[in-house]
Length: 114
Image (cartoon, rainbow, N blue to C red; front, side, top):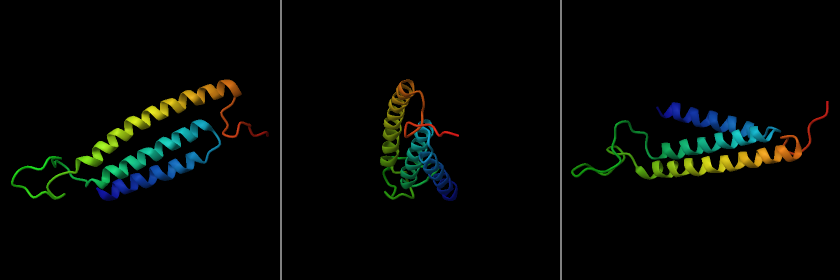
């Protein structure tokens, strides 16, 4: 499972960096979203990848990551998802306004001339 998670993080990071370097603002927005998803998945994986483990320590069980899942990274990721969604929505509105004012969505404001 760790291999799948690490591959997913790597693919999302690579695709996000590639999209951030593209000339269109919508592609930059999608790249930033992919990078934030990769960081969220990384933070989520730091809290130990356990299946069917409870986030609360039960009495009589040792308080280590073999017996439970750390709830702090889960709460951090949940908060980051909400903030990331709000930031993406705001950036999308600004992007649409910029496209309406300038007539294009190129990052530096100029379309490439063939």
